[in-house]
Image 1 (tube, protein in one colour):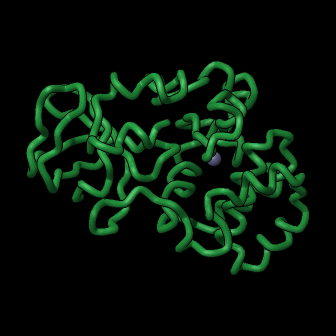
Image 2 (spheres, helix red, strand yellow; image 1 turned 135 degrees about the vertical axis):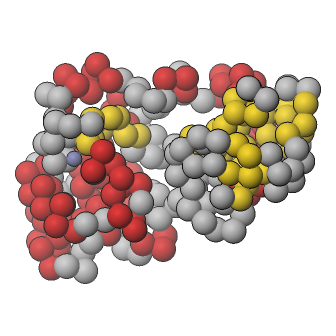
Image 3 (spheres, rainbow, N blue to C red; image 1 turned 45 degrees about the vertical axis):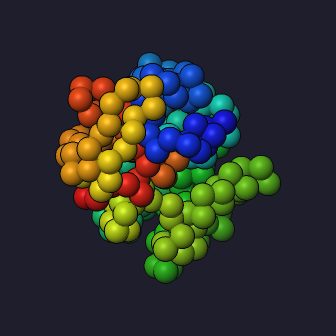
Length: 221
Ligand SMILES: [Zn+2]
């Protein structure tokens, strides 16, 4: 359904596509904050840190974008999950404890991170201890985020440069905004973008004070 929206139009007003995203679309900053605080005891579900906690969407959603698709993590864990270049392998010794979590989404992220650093020997030992049932293992593998870092699906601009939330991008062509009745001109700078978590080809940003969804292939960092 989502992709249909883009068949004829390059970008859409957020308000147009909103019904097609999960109900927490507008609350993306910290979905399920209260529930996650309760589940995690207000600690990072990976390393138990209590500072700068935020919710992290474990994609692709397996539970309809409900709380079971989210984990509560600290900023250190989150930045390393989202950017392979920032990984400090030693930080992930914390998974010694968190691989025993009963929350599948936590097991998934633990599995993915251990696979990313498994050229060190100790993560392999943990991976052997981390038992995922068939369904959970399929979810863990479903992003291509496993053996090879190259397979990780990142949001990338037209030049293949990694995009991150908060970045400023420039549009590389005139884009007709579906439902907006205006054109976003080539060369327009879009500040403070947000990544659309469940689609590496889409970001959100404000043009003419309207939040629009932009395909990453038409952007340049
Ligand atoms: Zn953490």
